[in-house]
Amino acid sequence: MLLAIFLAAVCSVAASASYPLVRNYTRSAYHGGTQNWDIKQDSYGRMLFANNSGMLIYDSKNWTLCPIGNYTSVRSLMVDESTSRIYAPTGDASFIKV
Image (tube, rainbow, N blue to C red; front, side):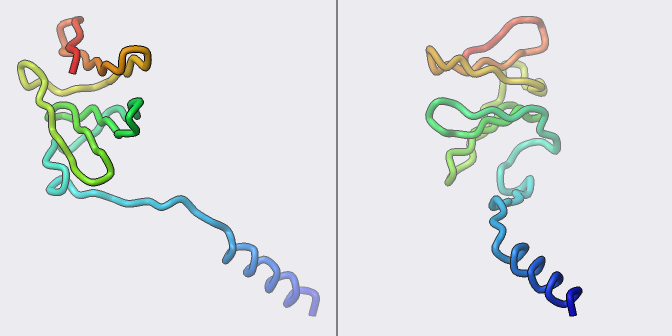
């Protein structure tokens, strides 16, 4: 009897727990490369992804692919909140303002 009450309580707590919305996007949806290396959020709320094909920007409706210079993979991103600039390393120890 106590076991049944305990299980009912656990099930009701689990059912009322809220979980974050998770949405998976296929490569054909964002038109980028197969790997994402880094994720940042800018001051406008857009999500930025360092991708094998360049930098991806997602504004909650549309994906935009920004190829970087010589079309190399982007492995990391930096967002400068004071200037709202996004920096992506190009592979030659320099940075590009996007």
